Amino acid sequence: MIEKRGMPQKTLDEILYHALRSIYLFEREEIERFGLTYQQMFLMKLLKRRMPLRVSDAARELRVPNFAASRVVAQLASRGLVIKARDAADRRAVFLRLTASGEEMVRAIESHVTELIGASLAGYSRRDAAVILKAITELDYLLGLRKEREVSLSGTRSD
Image (tube, rainbow, N blue to C red):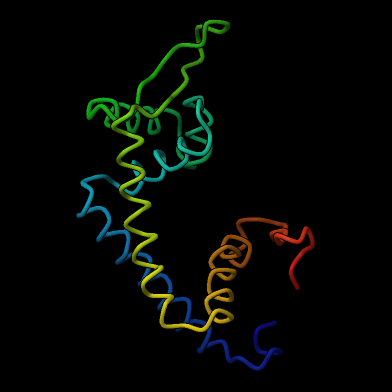
């Protein structure tokens, strides 16, 4: 398919390697800067968007077994970033929430990324910046992790 669009397979392989390398090195820098593992950061960012969240749902999002998600939660709880609470209706269910410190940590992580990307995008035209951001938004679709394309702000699929 990619060869039909005028791009040799070798070129695509190099582009994907470069993207993977960039993401890997960026995540390593974030891990060092904030003292959290990638799973811990991802779970905290997920909680910011979907609180409260059951441990089993967190495991599904992280694509790990429940015991592995419980370990990540315990690590975050020991640092005072996440709290666990039993569901009053179903005592077996444990819900997760960010603490005030956890919310502040997520704000710091996301502010760092926003400032970094914002400064980098300043060197691009508005159109090119929009294309870059759209590609980032569509990355999970491009990599086969999502079946449907994103709906644009206008309510239509972008083509």
